[in-house]
Amino acid sequence: MKLMERKDVPVELTWDMSLLYASEEDYEKDLEKAKELCTQLEEYKGKLNDSDNIVACLKKYEELGIIQEPLGCYATLPVSVDTYDSAAEKRAGLAMSLFTDISARLSFIESELSQADEKVLSEAIAKAEGSANYLKDILRNKPHQLSPETEEVLSRLYRSLDASYDIYEKAKLADMRFDDFEVNGKTYPLGYSLFEDDYEYVIDTDVRRAAFKAFYSKLKQYENVTAACYDAYCLKEKQMAKVRGFENAIDADLFYQKVTREMYDRQIDMITKDLSPIMRKYARALKAAHHLDKMTWADLKLPLDAEYDPEVSIDQTREYIHNALQILGDDYVAMVDEAFKNRWFDLAKNQGKETGGFCSSPYRKNSYILMSFNNKMSDVFTAAHELGHAGHFRACSNAQSLFDTNVSGYVVEAPSTMNELLLSGYLLRSSDDKRFKRWVLSTLIQNTYYHNMVTHLREAWYQREVYKIVERGESVNAEMLNDIFKRNLETFWGDDVELVEGCELTWMRQPHYYMGLYSYCYSASLTIATAAYRLIEKEGAPAVERWKEMLAAGSTLGPIELAKLAGVDVTTDQPLKETIAYIGEIVDQICELTEEIDGIHID
Image (cartoon, rainbow, N blue to C red; front, side, top):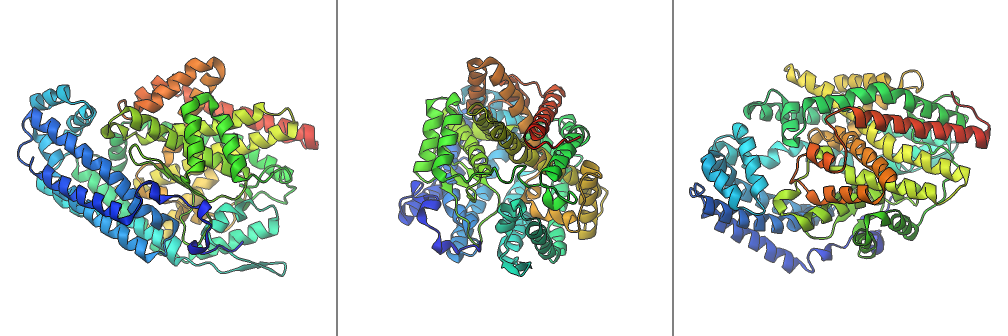
């Protein structure tokens, strides 16, 4: 189980960076082209008071952005799969330095546009094709724009201001080395991804709980530096919000997401109250199925039916997803096949690789998907999820300008979680076997709803509490963060789950805290996806077409309008209520099937 070094990974498990650039020379040529375009754009400095100049400038600005996206991916993605690669680190550092310089030199564009006469901007909006919505956002953001000199300074300080995330990742993936642990005379290797991808799901209770103890013991050694890192990030968010005229960091982030505070608080508060009893029942089902002496925080990721968890190959994964997503059309499944055939995925498990998964989609190029493949059904759901992002950005990139692909976080996870729901629906229709159905339903709870509406939502609850403290002018330290996270878990799980020592350190595992208010977006997006999925089940083709329209719309609409395009009204609490009720129905079905199959009754 020990992780291999990156150099030993089979090439077929890695992504193909040559799809972006066939050679280093091609990459260098685009770097030079980006520099040249930057110089050309500087000629517009002081001239963005004329609508024709504005339109011409933004057309070239988009051209620069289209070049920068693949450059950024080519430079930084190799670091995400091997933080020990010093050559990749050097290339990424040089590219980021160049982009920082370009951003600073061109910061005058938004500054001058924000100071332009509104009549001139209206004329430019009427003339612009792909940049009209960008200009509308300039008008919307105008009260929060700072002086040109200040904006340039902030652009030059970008990497320093955002250093918290890099420091966190370095501590987590490069410096944190785990010792082996022993259970019943046998030695087991341990690592970050080994714990998250393997040991949390291990059926052997002694091994699983020992791995938990060893993993969190190592986290404990880094709690103070990680807390200091997060404190610095929160302080930066607070101060940046203040200087831009916002009341607090939460209001600032929601403004740019185009979401109301009511929508944000609703997700956290309603799920905390109404989903809690449903998930506690699921926890009791896990305890009963595994005949555990007690249900602990270290046991919550167990598969419900340990003996019915067949291994899944990469080819089978492709076939499952291809068949499940056929409802989205021939173009969509052709993309799925292309992704597997042309190595859009990095599936390897190696030292120094980032944990979790993501999809990076440079404009009108192929996507790059990071995940660690463990031959489990959960990997099929993860791959379908990330392909949802790929399909979304292919659809909106093909239909929209680069300016109109900046989708709000409130919606951005909806296409990915929709794919998980379509996958589960396909699997349920493919067999009448009760045990198989229970397996699919429990996988849906574990991999879709538990992950997105419990794990990430608890992170959001915790994040909101931290921001309250920061707004009072206090700093946060490890002791405070541990206390908040433990209260967080106690609030949700009550007496049904024993919070063993170490669980309070779980806040240390999540990089989303360095990405603004991203954690709550998973539950918001899944609410939209669930409501739209129920419409697809009910209406068929018309609901599918609405969904595809939403995918193609990109950021031409705000999150409320995008959801409405798919037939979901997120200005009310009805979609969230219905989603929570749907999760309750799934858990009830699981418990009923468990009684029929195993004779175990779950209250």
